[in-house]
Length: 306
Image (cartoon, rainbow, N blue to C red; front, side, top):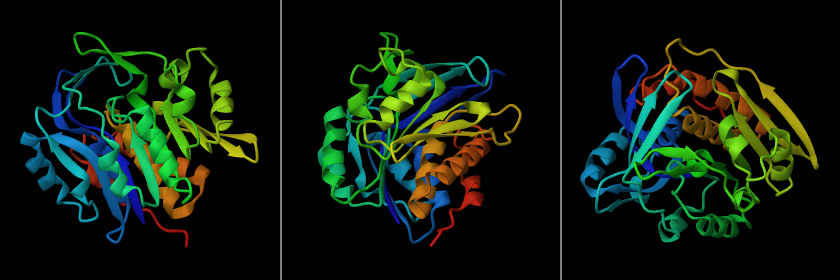
């Protein structure tokens, strides 16, 4: 199996409610490390993103721990790598600041890696790719019926002059969610995404009418919901929370969820079971500080159904 992963890398500085601080790779690294641990040695993960030239060597050395990650799509750029400061008031509320947001990943960097079994687009910064690039990706993989899964993530976040992020609606949200295998967002993102302020159920109805197969809404410590298109009817699946660890760190849980869903889906082609699997893996991540213990997710290694 092969999967292409598109999205910005972050250097995370996490300020926990108890006053402690964690520094670790974040952003797309959560997705890469999750896939590397869930997939087997014969599978290949193709990350496509840029990294500041001063950080490139250290990142490549870190990824060398994962033989199933092919780093050839990771390119250097001048200037610093995207840095994110996360200040948690509690396990659910946080203030996010993004510094040195990277330029959008150009199509010419992505195109060589589109012959994969699945494509994960994770909008880590919200500026990871342009809408036009996503349109080109859809067009190029359409004939092969390659599933494209997008984590909306920071697409709903604007940037203030002081680098603080704030929620905003996305005027062209229908184009972003058009003709995908699946779209993922959390409750807050689902509530703000459409300027017309659709209810979650109506958002799902409109999304699935765009020839997208599933809308996944994550709810943190309350589990998640999958709205699945079944022959033009919406099948709603509410998945309760999996067990988490007290004093957990939710940073990266959405990135882990998306990666776990994709790993399971390309092995099974089962939307509902893939959502349940991702819910459990993301809960396990919540018991880790940053990405430091991410390799413990190897306990969830995906088993092929055929």
